[in-house]
Image (cartoon, rainbow, N blue to C red):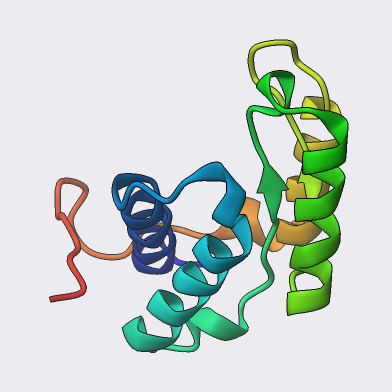
Length: 121
């Protein structure tokens, strides 16, 4: 994944966070991010993804499992349940990221000038 692709992905995730999506609507939030990646173009919607449900330390297990199953049904890759506050699921998340990105991620070089800011607009 190039620096521009990473930036587009990060922007899509940030958009989802800023949009005020309530926790009960995680499936719609994931679908919104997927639509944004499609609109950005450049094949971003075809890149491998890591899906995680965060802040599970403040949600009941039934809600987390319902959201996880809903995401799978909607077509998401196997979602991980994580909590940065407690550390739960973080090792699995890091393992999944390394597995998904593979050795090619370590070889990629940023495109353009070091201080260049990319925007999809």
